[in-house]
Image 1: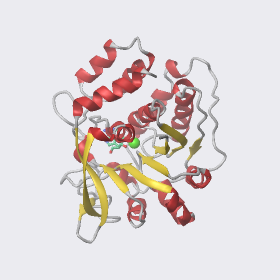
Image 2: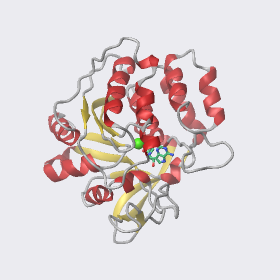
Image 3: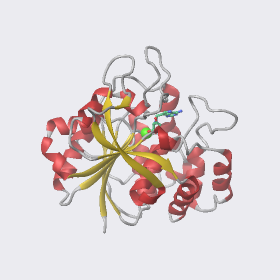
Length: 312
Ligand code: AGV
Ligand code: CA
């Protein structure tokens, strides 16, 4: 059975690799892509997305929509620069032109239009902040019925998240922190949420052995793309820093094609939308249900990523 999937991403290295991987999944019908300028700059992220669809989309036609959403707490500039590097890869620029269409409406409206015109329900994959979804729900509440479920890379119930910023207590994950009110808006809906939180993504850091494996298989174009992308970001070597790269979004995306890679449990949670803990997801009896991914089969995950890419 083909699964309808709509992707909304924010242009990081693992966001763009996620788009690449979704295009390799035989049972996924990618109905559209939204790009939000959170952990990226918009123009290179939208260009890179369209070039990836052209180069690795097996002739599929997928529209890319640019977001006009703005966040509450800005991402560090160094991280946002990554989209420029991916966009400039020679591997994506051989033909010197772009065919994949750019939508004429902003991405929250594109999401509404695409959900409405797709006959069966759609699985939403959000690997950046939830701003576009929150805006879409507020503008067109009817779309809730067209959403099979939301798979979101965001949040954590660990004591320490990955935000290290002034005036914050460090309990939040970045995608939730960028727009805490949007997360709250989505929490207030009745959409089924699968949460790929830091509990599970912490188990898949970028390490040198992974890089080496991809380097040694670089004669395959898809694997070379992985290797080139993950050459741009800092791996985990001696100890973890705030810049250490994990395969956050890629883990999220692989659960679409291979649910068996992870373990999930249902928990009740609230989101803090203001104050020193803004963006924190917290366990609470008064909260809503989310299906928390709390464990991953690390080796099986990396094998699956490599296998999918090889067909690229
Ligand atoms: O919090 C993880 C999210 C993911 O969607 N992003 C990166 C992934 O695309 C933000 C982020 C947290 N730490 C980072 C991030 C880092 N060290 N470098 C770049 N982005
Ligand atoms: Ca992301």
